[in-house]
Length: 146
Image (cartoon, rainbow, N blue to C red; front, side, top):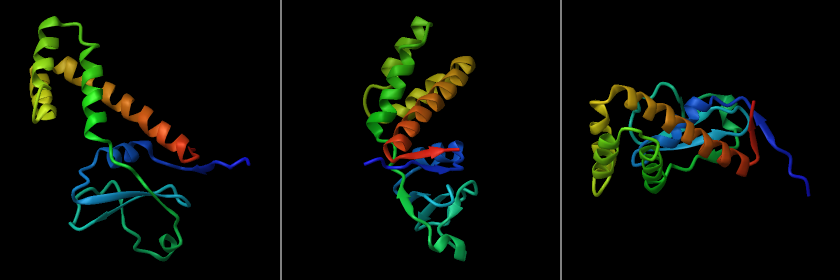
């Protein structure tokens, strides 16, 4: 039973935004005919980068695939993995302390503010990890980005 892959022109950067987005206000979907990323929100979103829920006729017959949110556990694990790559022992200790307990993510980011080079490296690292997760998800859903 060879299930064919769906090949779509997907903007992976927009997909990253959807993965990371706050799900308390919006849900995100991938259009399986267009490759567009849509959001459904109770609020007016300021995220111009993503398409609003179907407005025009061509969106009506779209097949929707729910984009699962990145879990807080996955987000936390990315921070842990990054800390393992930090050479500066003092910074590594500070980051380990920062991620212990509530509000780990904002404390982690606050520590990095004083280390612009490592902060930049963090953004690259996080993006690369999210890419991997997104590619694994697309693979699972049998969708191939063009």
